Image (tube, rainbow, N blue to C red; front, side, top):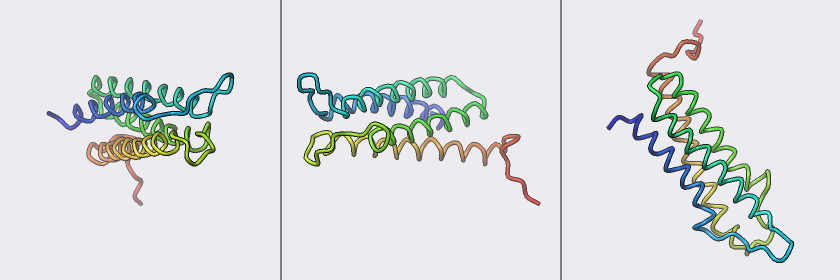
Length: 140
């Protein structure tokens, strides 16, 4: 199996992982009318996971190297967003003993790191191997 197809399946699996992390690892329960921040982070991460999955499906269907570089860069940006949502943008609960901080937050950050490295690493490899027009370095 080609590495392009394998990476496309990895992107789909990583998107599914993003989607399933809030269902596997615990997030805090809502109490009455008070909804915790980790609940909204989980919803946003499910959206990021769906976008990464769609990027993986598009990656599987594309044969053009420029399009694959663009999809890898897009998935890398989504991985950065996936790490920024629980860390900076929405956040998780403030209690240090909260279950979302113990399991869910590290899972999101680790998944984001692996996805970012694989996506941007493949984009770099594609630009170096194929010498894509407009992306090569200017050497004087």
